[in-house]
Amino acid sequence: MFVCTACGRKFSLEEHHQRCPICNEPLQLENMRGKIRNGNVWNRYKDFYAIPLNINYSLGEGDTPLIRAEIYGNEVYFKNESVNPTWSFKDRGTFVAINRAIQMGFERIGVVSTGNMAASVAAYGAHAGMDTFVLVSSNISKDKISQIVPYGARILKVEGDYGELYFKSLEIGEKRKIYFMNSDDPFRVEGYKTIAFELSEKVEVDYVFVPTSSGGLFRGIYKGFLELEESGIIDKIPEMVAVQAKGCSPICSSYPSNRIERFKNPITIAHAIENPYPPSGNAVLRILKNNGWKCITVEDDEIIKAQKQLAHNGIFVQPASATTLAAFKKLNLKDSRVALILTGSGLKTKSIEYDGEISSCKIENLENCEVFK
Ligand SMILES: *Cc1c(COP(=O)(O)O)cnc(C)c1O
Ligand SMILES: [Zn+2]
Image (cartoon, rainbow, N blue to C red; front, side):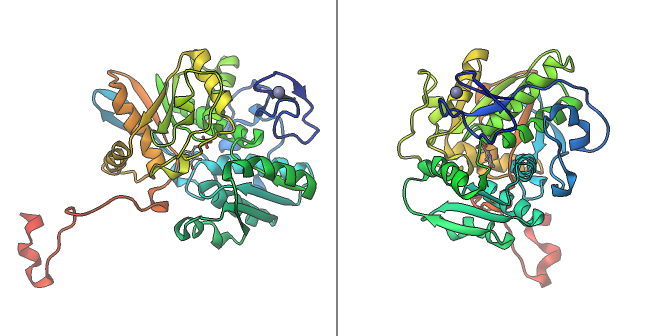
């Protein structure tokens, strides 16, 4: 069954739903219980999926590396999602959502996104041989569109309010028989559970830092931990910290109230988490409040510093992902075990300035070059 995250009403999985038909809040699948099995990511966690997952639609997402580092007296684990097939964790969700779309008889899929999710849906759509539609805002930069174009999806620039496009696309999807697998689609969120599953197989952490925009990722990881706890596989759910860029932080700034409010004039370098009106904002607020968990904002200069620090630890991520390290530094933890979800690759963005970090010399002088001294 689907369960509404707000009103609790239930709907049959045999019907096509993406949000609650009554209150328009996000739906999610009922929690599953099970055992962890052997094999690859989708075999090991099979028990936790209410729909069959056909591996033919996989591009090899998931089973990403976990890298340990010692930072300020804490054990820090980097969950490196940048090695997914289209270089972000979105692929985990796209795989589950495309399975659902095909099972429900859709031949066309779509997404509203200008970044990582667009690339992901375009790639999986191409692999599955489906007609794929990507709706972007009319002022999208060339830089951003260049990671979507190669997969051959139909890209449609839409003029008008971009936040509204999320809801409009679902309406048009119903009419035109296109499955829009947007940011917090219930099956996309199901895919993100695997991050919690993979983490818990390797290490028991005290904190998990999650860059949060629409809220789909945060909800997915939380649901994964809940299902593990309900299955008796873990004793305790780690404290989850929602991280946002100060320049676009609708969830953190709505924390005092119980309802998400649109964030005015968003501006940050962390474009992948720049959703001013998150469709799962209310659902994430509820999780944070029920557990007494924090929402932390970080400034752009802190993000840039953290991005460099992560690169100096061997992992080059995009600014949105670096927010996790920046937030971790703010909490001043000691003797803790911490997981940072490094959501996407730095190669997709080009924000680091290298002035003063590169030396040069002539080949004749190589031996006596300054850097070797
Ligand atoms: C999508 C995305 C996020 C946030 O995920 P939501 O589900 O929208 O909250 C974080 N980091 C990166 C790199 C992303 O692409
Ligand atoms: Zn509802």
